Length: 218
Ligand code: ADP
Ligand code: NI
Image 1 (cartoon, rainbow, N blue to C red):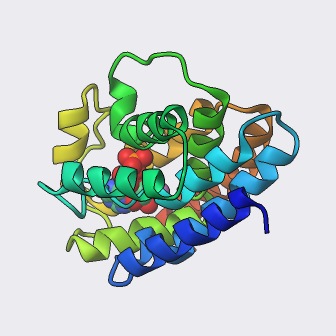
Image 2: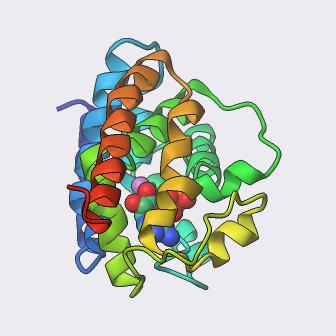
């Protein structure tokens, strides 16, 4: 095993342990799917593959939705782990930049230029937010938060700020209009754009069928 493969394996162990009791949409299986997506994207793009894979494994550990108030503490723990396992300072900084700024809520802020590794990790994660899996994840998170499936008296909001997006308590169907249907056009790499297209169409089909069943038309 090369040093880099050992680091990936160790990171995997570090993450599995910490995601034991997580919500189904943000659990180890999510990380595994994003890992597969990233491997696929890496095949055709010149990049620091190890950096991409390590960042994918770590990317949700300090998600503020599940770790409010502990985000910084977890980040310190992640950096100490990487340092202990011999990752260079520059690469640790790169991991930090990606996990701290790649999430959708940051897309409302001014964007600095994204490295290719950043672009791949973000696309790999966003692909898992759309399509059939994306639908499952949205309803899982909605259930976890006690949200309604839909609320006909509630219009969807086109959020203009991170705060407005994060404070939304909207029904899960609204989340499709507030985020999931927007992701296709926010993909960075050509390959992810193509994969996103199919998944996007599937969500549209789902939403049309949902509406038809709800109103007795199907
Ligand atoms: P990001 O980190 O890019 O902001 P999130 O972690 O907020 O993304 O979202 C990941 C997934 O969690 C979403 O793609 C969706 O499946 C689910 N999710 C997040 N917020 C909501 C919500 N308000 N309603 C339904 N699902 C949600
Ligand atoms: Ni994620």
